[in-house]
Length: 231
Ligand SMILES: Cc1cc2nc3c(=O)[nH]c(=O)nc-3n(C[C@H](O)[C@H](O)[C@H](O)COP(=O)(O)OP(=O)(O)OC[C@H]3O[C@@H](n4cnc5c(N)ncnc54)[C@H](O)[C@@H]3O)c2cc1C
View 1 (cartoon, rainbow, N blue to C red):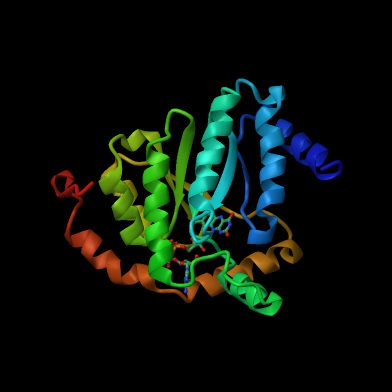
View 2: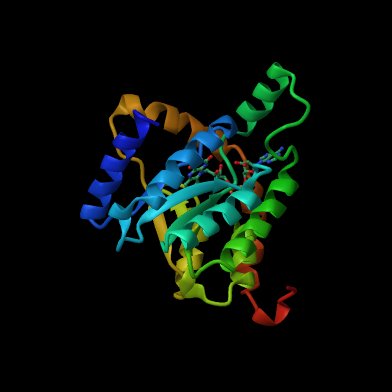
C-alpha cells in the first residue's frame, strides 16, 4: 500500500485533471483483495470529489462478483461518490484453473462452466442496473446474447454503456449503435510493441471462442421487444 497507492493516486489525479475516465482493470483472483484495498482508499479520498470518472472492473466468472458489486455500491454511498463499473466475464480462466490445481485447493475461484459465467454476467448486470444512482455500468462484452439480455433488462438505456475492444466485436457493436439509443465505448490499447505483446496474446486466445457468432444472426433477425420481458 505504501508504494502502490501513491502511484495510482497520482495517475488518478492526472485523469481527473484531464477529465478522463480511469478504470482499474481486474486481474487474477488472488489479487482481488489487494485491488479492493487500493480501490477503497481511492474512493474515500477527498481529492476525487466532483469527478465521476473513477472506475473499477469486475469479473463475472469470479464467484465473488456479486458481493464485490454490493461492496462497491456501499462504499460509493458511504463516501457520497458516483463510480463506474466495467463488467467483464474475465480473461484469465485457464490461469485460474491451473493455479487452483497446482496449489491443490478444494475449489476454484472462478466458475468452471461457460454457461455459469454467462448466467453470472447477466445476474451481475441486473444487479448493476439496480444501482445506477451510484454506479455507471459499463457492459464490456462481444457476446450478442449477453448484450441482448442487457437491452431486455434495462429500463433506462442512457444509464449505462456498452464497451468493446478495438478490433473485436465490430459487427455486434455496429448493430447496437445502429439502434441509436445506446452508447458504446471502444477500448484501445496504447503503448510500445514490447508492452503490448502480452495484450495481443490474450486477445488472440479470446478470438478462439466463437460463442458470439452463433447469436449474431438471431440478433439481426429479431429486434428486441420489451413485451418479451421476463423479469
Ligand atoms: C472493453 C473491455 C475491457 C476488458 N477488460 C478486462 C479486464 O480488465 N480484466 C479481464 O479479466 N478481462 C477484461 N476483458 C476481457 C473479458 O473478460 C472477456 O474475456 C472477453 O470480453 C470475452 O467475453 P465475451 O462476453 O466478450 O465473450 P464470450 O465468448 O461470451 O465469453 C468468453 C468468456 O467466458 C468465460 N469462460 C469461457 N470458458 C469458461 C469455462 N469453461 N468456465 C467458466 N467460464 C468460462 C471466460 O471469462 C471467457 O473470457 C475486457 C473486455 C472488454 C471488451
